Image (cartoon, rainbow, N blue to C red; front, side, top):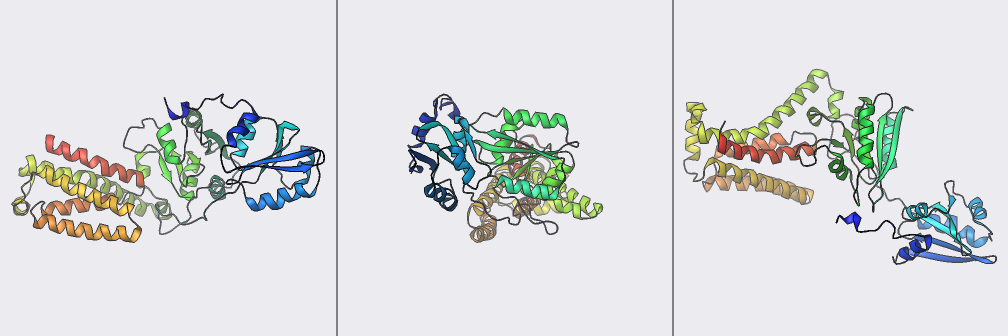
Amino acid sequence: MKPYEKIPDDSIKSLQDLMQLLKKSKDFITLEIASNNSSIVISYFRTLIDANIFHNEVLTYIKEQSFDSLQDIQSVLPFENSKITNQMKDIQDSILNGHILIQFDTDKLNGLLINVSKKEKRDIAKAEIEYNIVGPQIAFVEDLDVNLNLVRRKLPTPYLQMKELKVGSLSKTTVAIVFIEGIVNDQNLQEIIKRVSQIKTDHVLDSTYLIELIADNPNTIFPQFLNTERPDRVAAVLAEGKIALFVDGSPYAITLPTTLIDFFSTTEDYTMPWIIASFFRLLRIFAFIFSVLTTPLYVSILTYHYELIPKELLETLIISRSKVPFPPLIEALFLEITIELLREAGTRLPTKVGLTVGIVGGIVIGQASVEASLTSNVLIIIVALSALSSFTAPIYRIGNTIRVIRFPFIIAAHLLGL
């Protein structure tokens, strides 16, 4: 049984059932205030509301005046989007998103919902992953409205449209599908809407969750969609007729459909003459091929194809490997795994410490492995250049692909040769 199937859909049949369930939580508050011949009951989660707004603009008004109906309260309180409803689903979703529920104890079927939610969000900052030297520097944040605002400022056109869907039986996460009407491919748009609306899961906490749930082949190591933290990049792909997906709480947008070339392009390329931009794109593609194939070529040539090596270079390789007791496969895997361990450690440690570990660890381990005759000098140079080449990929997800597919190629080179 999947996690989201453990909670029965009909477990909450009435507003009374909902209130009994919510009261089990220590941060759910219920206040009663006398008013004329009845009492006003205010229910809310103290961890979700803005306490200042609630006390100054709601509680003060209710305590100072007397009311006979919810309409009277609604007319006095300074909130535009308040609403009176008897729909239990609306009440449940609203309370869980920072609304307060106001009722009279004589009428427990109807309630007044007022949005006093507390929104914690960080300031807009520079892009850290997709860093550019020239061009806009701002990046998305974890707030959906802020992110959509950044895109609309880039594309102030009435044809920029958005559709919202709720995903996750527990998280009720808002997913925004953004496109430009008249440019977008309608078939692609309808397919994306269909896939997102058919998602069955208990929670979606980030855009990366969504990628796995709507992908054609979720088991492939190659990225099928591009996720970006840059508003200018999203604006550019929308203008090309593509689609962007935003997940509330995620600082990354997903753009689709995507081709492999997109993962080697940067927004900075659009600020350069086409010749220079094309050169750098080709350089990144060459670095991708170099990073994936160089170490496997070393293993294959030294295992099966010595005749392909020029005599001058062959002598250097023989001297370099003369004291190494392992076959090229073991030697290559040892160094590649060492590089990956250093890279992972540098990522998880604090920035300054991680940088030190990467530099010092690489130098010390490389020199020690050569002196101990565990690896050759030539292979250390090859592996270092391969690792350096993988860093030229401007999109993080394609960089992960490069790191993974290198190992099957190394093993295949040992078993099959060229």
